[in-house]
Amino acid sequence: MNIRTRFAPSPTGYVHIGNIRAALFPYLLAKQNHGTFVLRIEDTDQNRYVADAEQVLLDTLKWLGLNWDEGVEVGGPFGPYRQTERREHYLKWAQKLIDKGLAYADPYTPEQVQQFREEAQANKQAFLYRNYRPENPPEWHLGLPLRFKQTKIERKHFHDEIMGDLEAGAETLDDFVLIKADGLPTYNFAHVVDDFEMEITHLTRGVEYISSMGNYLALYEALEITPPVFVHMPHIMAPTGNKKLGKRDGAKSVQEYRAEGFLPEAILNFLVMLGWNDGTTTDIFSLDDMIAKFDLTRVQRAGARFDEKRLLWLNGQWLRRLDIAKLFEYARNSANPADYSNSFWGEHGRIASDERRLEVLAAVQERLKTLADLPALTEYFFAAPQIDLTQITENKFLASFAPAKLVELLEIAISALETTDWNADALQNTLNDLLARTATKPAELFSLLRIAVSFAPFSPELPRTLAVLGKDETISRLKKVMDTLAK
RNA sequence: GGUCACGUCGUCUAGCGGUUAGGACUCUAGGUUUUCAUCCUAGCAAUCGCGGGUUCGAAUCCCGCCGUGAUCACCA
Image (cartoon, rainbow, N blue to C red; front, side, top):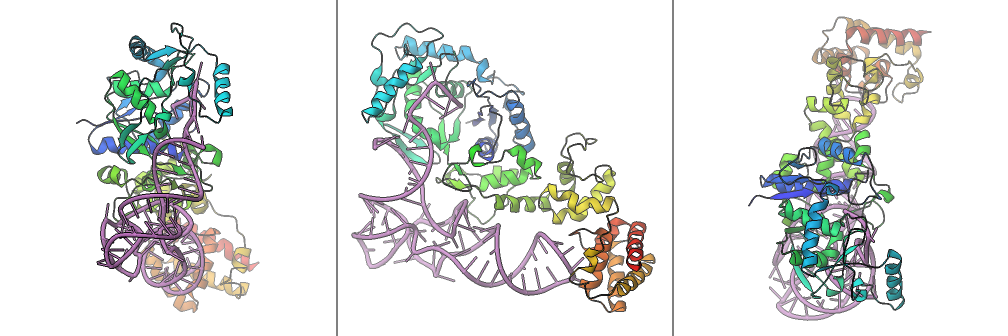
């Protein structure tokens, strides 16, 4: 069987981590079966429509590497893939239901329906529209809501690949709206039609839809459609409280994580582990690993809490294991090799040459937690730092040294470095000799040199720092500090 | 309230009748020729929601309870 899955987001302008997992699971399912991953835009809610939202969504998916085989932008045999462009499809299926006597026009205004609802609640009863079903509904026409007519009020049983065997009580079956007064279909109707027409084999979505399964099952039956395989994913819970992750809880959008220097690899890895494991103790997964190992039967049923600390840890893991060329691209943060307007590099890093940047990036790669750390870790490689003697005089290893002693140490170091081959190994040897000659501890001499050359809170190991900095620059900076100290 | 789910360290989880209940994140302490990061070692941390059963033996099977969540829109 050719597996076809889909991600069907609403363009509401905000893509958070939870939304992305709703894309990741079907993506993995499709890819591991050499199937097709479809992207469909569910834009039937005109009130929530946001103009740029679709573009943000597509950009986010591309950035993450979740490329779709079929859908908006790329097209495919079952288009259009935007629901507002598929009105006639829904109308066609709606007509079929009307002809069978399984759909009828709702003659009431929203206010009247609301009144029924309050009436039922006042009587401590659950509100069901079907209890107020009009006896002689008018003939349906555009402008009136069209409702589904439940004819078999019964308990429904169904299977879910993650949640197991489930059931829906008869009380959940109601005459829900198929076509809204504005002529557009509801999600409840549109997704059933689209999934069928697009030959979706595995329907993935959040567990919140389980409550509506009774209605969907009745609709499949009325439409004489074989339902797809159901895959309901547990929620991602907010860091605090007991609610599912959402914008209101301060959940950051994927764009924000990107801006903060998180990598797609880390985000995807983090998401797949939230509610899934491969049964081993492995916790680093590339997208290819996930495709190979992902298995619905090992997905948790309980919601998993979002823990940003873990995301940060994974980001560090990926920052360190990523190929330097790939990392270089992420640091540039633009598809255009000449465009550094949006890059993570600092003021001086941006105007350096690619060769220089690459060299520096390689030196600091191990120390990065996010790409946003780049300026603090690299700027002193590109431009001489501001001299701040207190960093030396108040350093815990150097505080006991008199300025004259520090000057002497620098002087000896400079003369030794002047005759050293400029590579990390040779520098390491020179520095070791220097320790013996000056009878200082590594913490003392190395701290002095490191600070004098960088004035940064942290930097790579000293030989490497000096090697990348270059001989002339190193010596010139040391001399300048020495002169300042001597005054 | 009705309906449907879920319940192992703080967090993510392994576990599918016999384990000192394992791993990872976080945190703490120590180690590596400086800082920071990495890496290594050790440690803290779950009476497996509670109570009954079944069994020689239960986190694992059964029942009840409790707690938590989702949903009850002309939103998806």
